[in-house]
Length: 203
Length: 89
Image 1: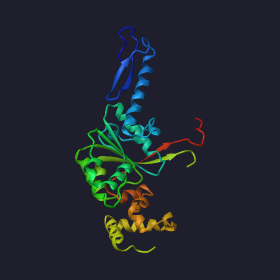
Image 2: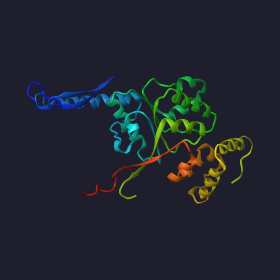
Image 3: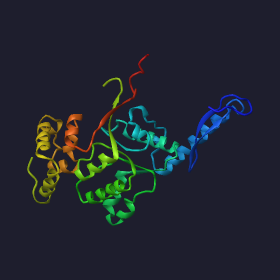
Image 4: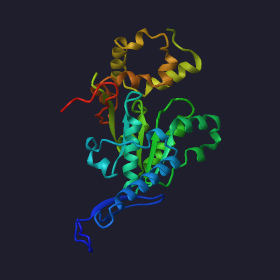
């Protein structure tokens, strides 16, 4: 750690998040005792606003991911992640925890609630290019993904194919891993898959 | 439970074609011992609509891996003390 040029004490590393950026800086907690708390408070406010702007529900804004359980490729944004498992097991919590980490590491993230997108698609399929447009973000996070075998299948497959060809990092939650061959092949290559189970002391 | 006809029959056929014979054999074995066999809401329509082959097969990691050669899932456990007290160290 670098030393403060004024008091020669070791400085503290602080992660700073703003509305369009994120970076690390070193501050002296001795010369400016309140500065670390100020940075943390402002960063948390910016993080909350960014998560809100993305459409992530407020109940997940304090989410944390258990980073030690993920492969290095996932922690280093080389591979996407699929979380699957029962309702209430903690999939979205883990995903938003990873989104928070990605924002802190200055990654651009786009979030979508798949159920809402699919409803929109079923109501106005001719709006498909807008509804399923690929965002320019580094990471695309899709909550509650599912593939039905109805008329939307081809749209969904086309969307996944575009994500695959664009080499996007994809975060996804779903109750079961998609079984359709063409989609499974691409998601299997793009992501590491984690079945989420929770332990509450009684199970 | 009756076999669907017409368009629903075609949808069921298309859906089942994506699985190999071995996978379907494993699925029917698992179905026979699963909660679905006594569930009034189980139907072929629901089988297709909710991709129940994958759900029922996903009972264990071995079966899940057998279902799809493209996935290599791991399990992560989240500790959540909601009702029980935190254990003492």
